[in-house]
Length: 343
Ligand code: 5MM
Image: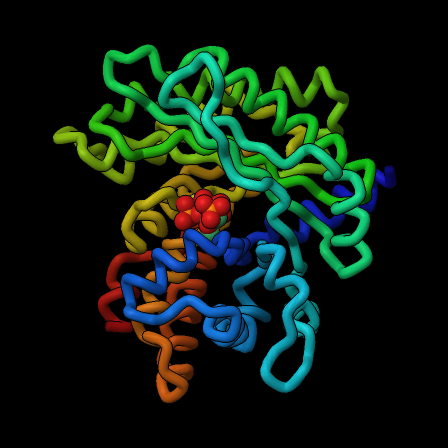
């Protein structure tokens, strides 16, 4: 492992003013997104959609540091025969790859999940590196149940253990691991319950990373923010989300980690941007804080595109706008009126 090179890639992924496009929806997830815009999900429609994003010159060259790809996409060619991964490289962004293979029910823990995909991961990473991937992503999913003992310490532990196994294998293959332990915002819990569960999850994750000798300087953390559940009647203000998330991260994330790139987790586009900007306005942080959004970057372009070739320019404008707003947020410079001006 060359740690200096891993650290260089990790720092480039969290360059202030840039963030990560999570375009790694598995076939099942992209079908759900396409169903919402009434587009049939085929190999070609998925290719056309992602090609539209990767050919958004301003967004890709100025606001996007890296793109997380799904296995199908990393091997796909654009309509003119150029490999999609080359489009990303030509824009100056770094290609990355999702390597987890989704979740399975966790035996003994009804209602809980464990992320799988460690078998043969070393060989898969070698092929992805040869193809051009310089970072990878693995997502663990932790649910918050109401009065059900969920999440159990078992679910937290096995998911943290797998995240660390994945991260160690990535670094051995000279690939920067994005470590994503996602605490879902699906329930009706308040922000303090999310804080408490996320604190347990992050502490366990870093304990496992240390035990498995993962070099913290050569990884990126992709966490959820401290935020109330979607169904909670008690929603927190942007300032409260920012202050509690920063307090939580300072308590759990060692300063050796070069950067933190948040997931959006189902927040509205504007909330995800406002929260990131409010955190960066607090300032004086030991790590760079940016975005690694899927839905909060893509919902608008998906709607604008709606599967029609004549809407490609509109889709690219919508993507560029969200990427620019989040770029400003990564520097603490986003303001709500910038959204209205663009509307
Ligand atoms: C883009 O969605 C990613 C893949 O999801 P599936 O494996 O479920 O298809 C997902 O891991 C994503 O990278 C993160 O959850 C962040 O995306 P959001 O939409 O939460 O910002």
